[in-house]
Image (cartoon, rainbow, N blue to C red):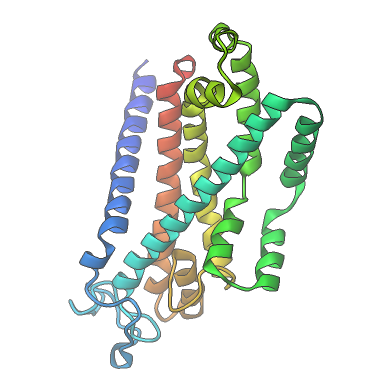
Amino acid sequence: MPSLRTGKHWRNRAIVAALVWLALMLAVVLLADRITPHDYATLDLRHRLAPPLGFGGSLAHPFGSDELGRDVLARLVMSIRVSLLIAFGATLIGATLGTTLGVLAAHFRGYVEQVILACVDFQASMPFLVLALAVLAFFGNSLFLFVALVGLHGWERYARITRALAMSSNAQVYVIAVRQLGAGPWRVYLRHVLPNIASTLIVTMTLAFPDIILLESGLSFLGLGVQPPLTSLGNMVGYGRDYLARAPWILVLPSLVISLTTLSMSLAGDWLRDRIDKTLS
């Protein structure tokens, strides 16, 4: 019993720390323009590769500067905003597409359901990173295209979950009663089915969000994501790899933010799932 209580205590502390970190990231996204000491794209070649404060640096660049003299703190703040906004937008695109197709499959059944399930199986078997590399290399690095492409990652999980839950809801007494009272399909799904399965879909979004962040970071690291002068966390890591020995702070700081954010989102998703589904507690 003591070991069980100790484990639960540390898990609760980890969840609190994760929620605090996510709140901090949200504050950075909302207040990025006000908390940056310099413009993230301003060059200062006289202070290139300046070390962080505490390692011989100065208050002018508390987190150091990069190979072009750009302030690392300003670029880190802007990178957090860009990466999280891309991940949020892409998650919404994937969730909307998958949920819509899942509802259509549950409602029409038959041929429509078979076509949607075939698309789901194709998406699940396709190495998405290879597909993304091919599309971005062929069509170019448009930010809109990049967000839309990243949004297609993982939509099949929403489609499968929505289809299964919608089919289960359709067999419930309250849905049958609503239909017998003359409610149309739009009203049934928008007013009764979707609100009852929304909690599960929200938890799925929180668990898929870290995958989107890592995908965006990986593509930006390879040079196929966010393009200069705009910056992202993966973009910073990509530029910092060439200066790992001379200026490790360029790469270490965004890498740490990526790791802590994905870990925090995973812990928050697990916590939210436990809160919603009481059978798991």
